[in-house]
Length: 342
Image (cartoon, rainbow, N blue to C red; front, side):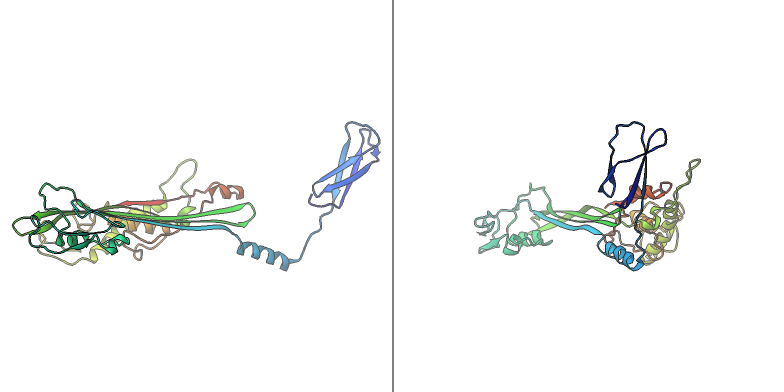
């Protein structure tokens, strides 16, 4: 009862009142001791709870709790970079570095010693022109059987987590993450006719994963028990694709020299097969990603960023389990993660 101001009445089976001693243990427990041994005794407990009617004090208490509602917060960032250069001939001597003199039989036009791979490389600097510089200093073999590519890799990961408890029995877990990885490969083969290393077959691959804030659409209804109509956000995403495609095509200029398109490329002329601008079809990743973000975050398709790698946004809080206590079980929460492979 959350009070120690209580009155206990013990009544026997025949309705007579039983005398005894009452002991208050705490706000929720009491004990009753009688000189007689009886069974079937009925107890009536009456208590008085003091009501604090100081609205200002209550307001201060709830405000202070809201300000201190963040129980835990963490932000973790990690990054990894790497370089692989096949055919690299200098051998490390001290701390991964050493003096190297090119073989005169293989590099007759080069003379003098150099320090390989260099101080900046040892300190972790990733130079996209490292292979070209290495070839110019005679660090790469001219063996024609070398068929492994020069590889540069980069990855970074952001993780954010916060535990918020603004009110008793209401806990909100906020999570956000952003992962980006890229791997570039390029072949460097020696050309005897030109006396140079020719780079060719450059390829860039990677993965991108990011959480987004879907609070604007997370609690939209998905139908009733009889039928489940399509999600409104999903329908918006499909309709937004054409708007996004036209925005992307408007950034291009007409080009009459494009032989793949009859009459040349014209941004305002749609593809007869899809009705979308040429080069930006309904399943194009450049079209799908902005349309998805606009639909599920509640943004306008005319203003959403067109970049395929937007900045990290916060996940929709995981409220479903907690909201069931407050009568919102009929609503459907959605937690969406965007996975893009390029």
